[in-house]
Length: 145
Image (cartoon, rainbow, N blue to C red; front, side, top):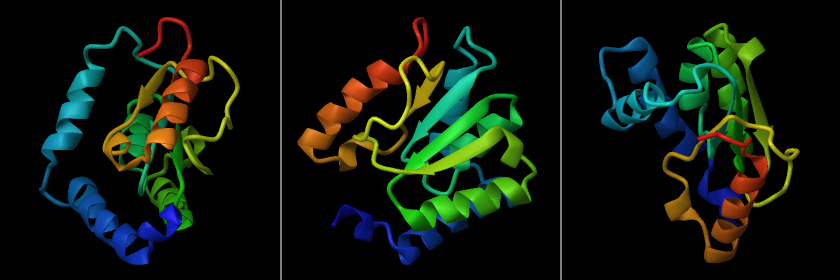
């Protein structure tokens, strides 16, 4: 089962990278690239969906910048860690984390102004990939990014 791929060992490795970004001197080129992309959007505040949120890195970084973020992940361990990280960094009021597959239609139409999908699509089986793309178009508000 796919959820089993994202076990405690995997989440622990993600958490170590998270700690380096938030508490260390390390920065991630991938994280910097995504955050730089946000400066190009005309949407400066709003609701963001972080697909495959892992331990909450993007959702938390964007919450710190004034966005309301919803992280979606299939791993119960990732969601638990995301919630703990958001609480520890005092952004729990602006960051929500949902345990569900990205192929499930769990949000209402036009729910998000921005959808971030960093490091997820290459991991999806074709049928889940297609359903996720369809969901993204359904969830994204008109004029969203």
